[in-house]
Image (cartoon, rainbow, N blue to C red; front, side):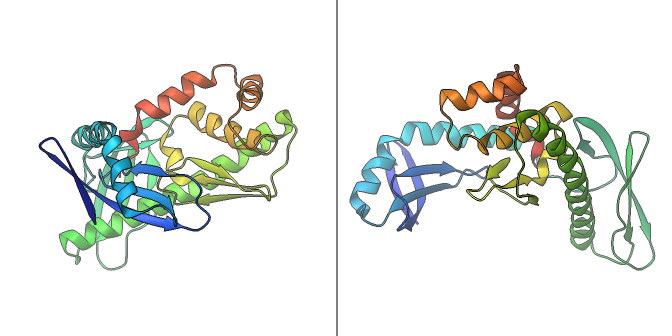
Length: 242
């Protein structure tokens, strides 16, 4: 772990080098950790200078994520907690049963019901319930996104080679050079209009790989209000915290 001083503040950061990396990128994780991605030829001293130059921005980003964490604390997966699905709020209802692992959650009315073995410790129960809920989200995401991809691909005039659901930490979606689309399962937490934006965004990358004006014009043809949906994603990052 490297560090620099900025006024009275100390910024710690981790450096990750890569031969294929041509430019420097500084990423701030939701836990406020600083990761600097650099080409092999950049010296340690030069990396420190670049981090110091971006210190104010880094500190602002870290404060932003700390504020989000305070507003949206990590879930304990206990009865009464709020669970979001397609932008709607559900209350988690945990039922303790004898033996077995957590049962796949079910939505009934505005509640999400899940059962867990009563013989587990508090930490084990939390993990068991969380694993079951995340697996449920993953399954729902796969079904929903596949349908939305099929709907919008015809309108845009593209056909992906394959659609995959992944556990992506920083991206909502991605498009590979060979036409494979990957989507973050967490997007099922968001309203359908936001899922549609992410789907349209990646489908448009099948035609235009960059984020040039031509790309955004293509997005706007399929979704004239894309900017509003894009802003929603930026402003509501905390709600995806589990």
